[in-house]
Length: 158
Length: 40
Image 1 (cartoon, rainbow over the protein chains, first blue to last red):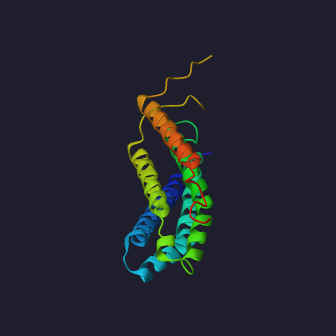
Image 2: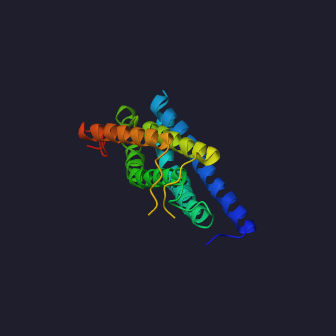
Image 3: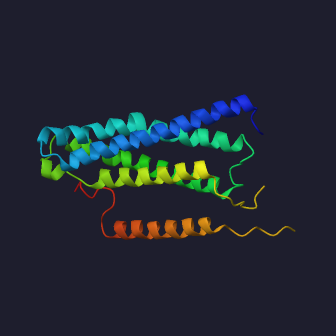
């Protein structure tokens, strides 16, 4: 079922807004995680690891789920389809992967926030949030390139 | 019966990169860099 043009435009704006917002939240996480890893100030290190958890729950998780949901609406409600074009399938797989890893990683962010209140700075510092945020940013940038260039290729599915 | 069209080159490159990344992740997990690494 294809959406009428006005609804399709509104759905596209919502999808782009959620996805770009997600990318922005990832960039914020990357900066905060890098500050936590590199800062010489003990208070700043603790603040960074305390902050990563709410960024995850308040920004990353809702925006990632909204991006996934609006992407499904956008593909199923237009002639692009969900499994018709390779670039749409690639974006779907990357989005599902990113959302899955993020939901699992919220537990680690919670553990780090707990540690920030008790552990020493040396115990607290971890490259893990930087690695995860950088990987997520790379994944979303690839998805962004696919969305704009829409490389050719039909899967053969209706 | 219609024949399935061949996958474009970019899809094959994507698939190879995805498999390599998956292997690196599996290797890291097997080396003990998985969840809970810093939490005793």
